[in-house]
Length: 222
Image (cartoon, rainbow, N blue to C red; front, side, top):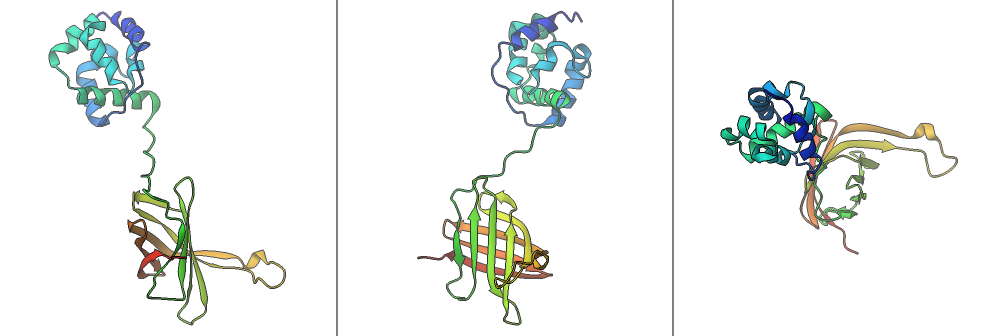
């Protein structure tokens, strides 16, 4: 097929709007190989490379901006979803895989001091950063009755109300006397998951050396 239309497509692409993200790259590869490869080659050449992640441009070309495209592809009646898949496949060839989506946004700021009003003597301090990552500190007591500290130093939002990360037991230098950095230790003893049912209620589930604990928590009022 005469490939002069490629330059027409390139000119049309220069006038296009913002690219759109496609859905199914593997389906786009199958469609590209069966429909487009004979003219565009693999990897794509000419104006086709500029159609990466931009199915609207392919639609414009089929609809008449590039007459040879209309003759070659128009009768197939490709759907918008199929064109989006093709554009996504070209995008992967040109730019590599798309970056992962951002973590889901939490609906509220969960920064506060949390506790269980039926269980005095311990609490969970939670700070949500501007990045939406969170840092938590639990002050409690061990089986021997001695003070014990755990931290959740960041993690990942699994959904808009579920956050999980590593759970560390920490020890440090005494407040009395000179600070001793050699006494500071943070040892991962398990993982922790925060699940919020609303802005003021949730559960803190954590494991310590194989033992799992689940605590209902609420914001501590002042």
